[in-house]
Length: 363
Ligand code: PMP
Image (cartoon, rainbow, N blue to C red; front, side):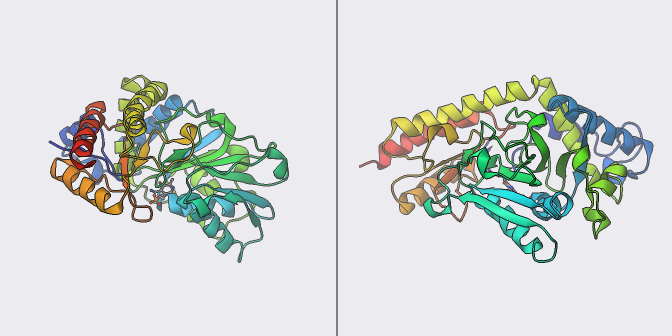
């Protein structure tokens, strides 16, 4: 018995894996596995439309937003978003974490070949992205294409819970690590994107939710990168990641069965509270995040007072079945990723281990 604290790909609900196992060889009496179904046939068509309808319901996505199941990871969206939305315009970036910085860097690369102006609203890199960038809506040109934010900084363990004011400019949100784990108001966004491999399903699916009026008016040089073409073809312009979409649909049903996103957010808050309480009451463990209200409820980062002690912690934890608790290689320390499917008992057990480890090593 072990607990998987991986940041993604990460733990999936056991019920979902079991259901997929049951249906693996014969999906809905088709005599075929989902992996063997043509993406143009009635079975897959049903899988796709049900997955979309469930997600629309779960996130209360209005009808004037398209839901796309794409490939290429969230990282491809760093290029597709400006390519589709920002031509001839300014686009703002908030660099509060490594992925926000990457999004801006990719936008700058694209700006060398496409006419648009990426502008950074600030970066907290100098202090190790230990807090979020703050900005005033008056800094934003109302004619700009969008303001890009990363909702949850997976590596650093910070998150945005109060969405910023943007002077009427659409918000674009990278929701990769807290989609369906935090109950955001979709109508506050022009576009949301997320890699599936944390809260949605296996790696290989990228979700894009985009408001119809933001679909590109200009021709995009690649059909595969053109949101309008992808939307008009209902994610079937080319062969979609069929098995991943099927798994995502099962996860959506599972989220619904537990009471939806608000119920899961509440549970995630409880899990995170257990860990942060332990970190706060101890002088042995510290949180690298500067402000309490910016602490992520999905990726809890912490460390001891030395990299050697962190290494010892990670090794002993691993031996006991607390897997993948090592922090990202760029920041060190520990990171407990406790997304929707991560069980409360696992967090409880980790806290017990943290207490024991502290007792033995805090000399
Ligand atoms: N944004 C965030 C917030 C992430 O956590 C990740 C992956 N961990 C990415 C973007 C990149 O996603 P992908 O690996 O799917 O390209």
